[in-house]
Length: 305
Length: 263
Image 1: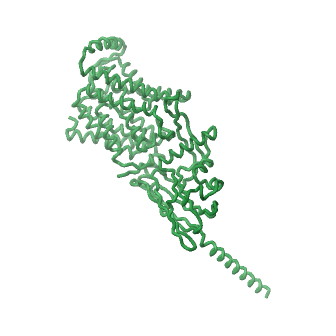
Image 2: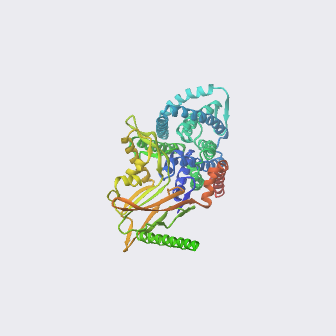
């Protein structure tokens, strides 16, 4: 059955957005990522204009992340305190990132920098997570070396002022750490035009040392607020949110997020990391191919990422 | 008496004018071109997935026909992809087009190059080469213009908004006239607006007669309400979008919790 989308000005088989929502919602519930880096290109592939795809995706992430956050909160897997610090940093970082983009656009190299950041960040994060998870699963001697390396980082982190205890995560950090890290992810997310969940998850695991299951819930909590802001701003300034498309997507994503949470609780942290790393690497490979293979069309609709 | 003569003269003149008009009408009736689209008002509701529009009419039996379906000319901006550093395909600039229709379909009884002279093609904007001359573009030279116009046509054809067919118009010949008919697929990608169906009768490589019909595509009901709200009440629309997403997320979360899914 086809439905006409009043803002996208196109017609779509309803099974496509519901199916996409289900698949991306599943990833959201499993790994605590919004899934924008997957959903937006998929929607464009199915004929949705790029500006509408990006804005409407934010709207459905609101639904998927609230569904996932609720499920994780009920089982005690959301660190609200950590989430709020990260949010403050992410908000400041987002503002800096937007200004940075303006400077890059004025210099005329914005597109190149954005793509390069995408490939480098996705590629390095994916590769690191993949290798680290395999090593961790094999439980090789590398643990001792890691301990050595970690202690220097943790010594530095512990020397910072404003130390505070994050009970849910079972860690103690300076309040500046999540704010600065949130800011760093915010800058990158603004440059790359994505929510940044796939960057935030490794940051929380490797630097903040949070347990994997709390990371997923806390990441979703943070993504929820970012996407509420983006959805409203896109509706208000660009008029590019397609409510009907968002409803179709969230029909799938809210259910997918719940199923993801159920699966996630049955899986080990290393298994979760290795699957997320594989997905990130596949997306990186896709972007590299897009950049190097001759496209079938040399023109595209203006607007969007 | 003088007055009476004047009245008689006036009536004779009127009669002569009437006979002349009749004569002209009868003379052109056999060749008069007509055009009628069966759907002149396409309504776009939630279940709209494009439509079919048939164009039919009468024309002189000795003429070939060209049917052009277009939207009004407008301005378009597209992103150009090019190679950066000889390796990476990236957006390298913007293609700005003026006097360009968003939709352009051309159907003809024969190949238009065979039935129409180049200057007539240009005059009536028939075929992609004539359209290229008609369109304004930010290209540095003719080679650039050719390259990007070809890419533009490829882009539009892939969006199902441009196309050309030959021999799809069916003709039923009579003694003094012929009936023509074509059934076209109206793409759902064509946005709401006014479209013109122009029918050209062609003889000796020249357009000898034209007839037009209009098609209006309009959003109706809830589709129209949503589109208007997104544009005119953006803040309200934004709040509703966020609220609906929050409610749906919580709703599904509650359902799963009740069914024990999240435990």
